[in-house]
Length: 434
Ligand SMILES: *Cc1c(COP(=O)(O)O)cnc(C)c1O
Image 1: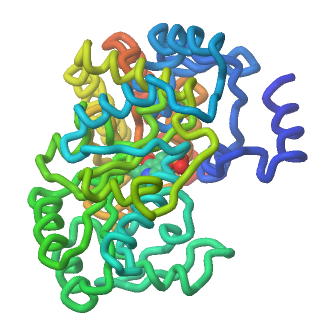
Image 2: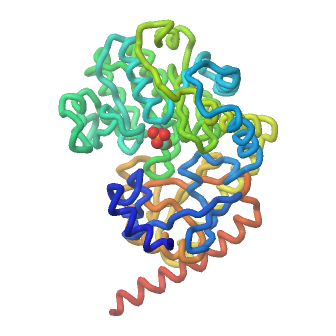
Image 3: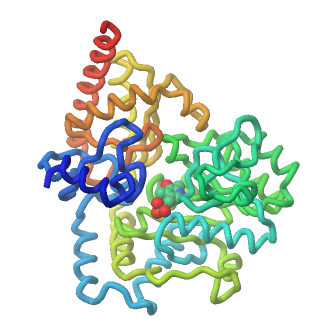
């Protein structure tokens, strides 16, 4: 079946044709391709078209598609069984690796997704502090649990309104939303309601409203303010973990959170999440403590094997300089290409994450990101895809690179960016003349 036929069929049986909304290409006014296979930096669709992939399953595939280290570990485990519901040595090894690599983590619990990791970390934070409220930053995504699905309000700290029907107003009212990179807003909220707040969750480098790094002093300030008010600081490193540095954003910026959530890279492309922190806190989790958290497939042997394979490769081969160089060239090269074609553009990279906005910048918050030209992004996205480069189909996502994105692959992509930018600026002029 080809892309068009599968899209027809998918929409009949699956809401919106996809199993996660952003895959639908709705944000760029288009329709998705259906993958036939992935290899290294490339995806091939059912129509036989090949794309250089900068989505990489939305982050997990830091070694690219079908890396032998991962597929061999999976093949080996496959013949020994897919799930036991009883502990394995591999779970212990993965926990040890995560504790060794992520500076603030002394003990860790595996779950099956980033969403589970953040909702479990929130329960633990509430239990440990005896407080119910939580604060987050607008434009930060922490999975789809009720407590985190709240929209940003304008101004300083606004109490959240549900972002989706089905989120009880009473739940959303427990979530305060703050502007990212704005310490005075944090200070004000904590001065007013600090004693009610269990935790502040943050993506230490925002990757879910485009790429927005923390301004100098922001994470340090969060650490100081939360400590002063007995509020737990939670770094959601589901995306940044093992991506912005081997030890995540906490290693890169030298700021230690109380709890850390992980996912994506630690599963090597299989469904995984984890949360961890100081042993004293983590010992509150059942069965050593009373904070309930469980999972039929948690610590699944296949996911664990793939995760260990990726982390081991990263530790042994230290590809972070090469990854960062590739990401920086892509961000700088795309900004150049867009400006040359007459578009306003700004872009950055942090480790193996990179992103651009159709906006002069600076972009330091979700509110800034929303000023960007999303319509121009959509046209550029289509022009790049047509030329074989797959960027995330939304202006509020980042690009990823893997070890398979060699300098030659990046060169080819930069040539496509230049061509696509000119093609899109040409079509702008045409449409203005029409
Ligand atoms: C992807 C992501 C999540 C959610 O993880 P899922 O595995 O999709 O549930 C949570 N937080 C951040 C920062 C993410 O990037």
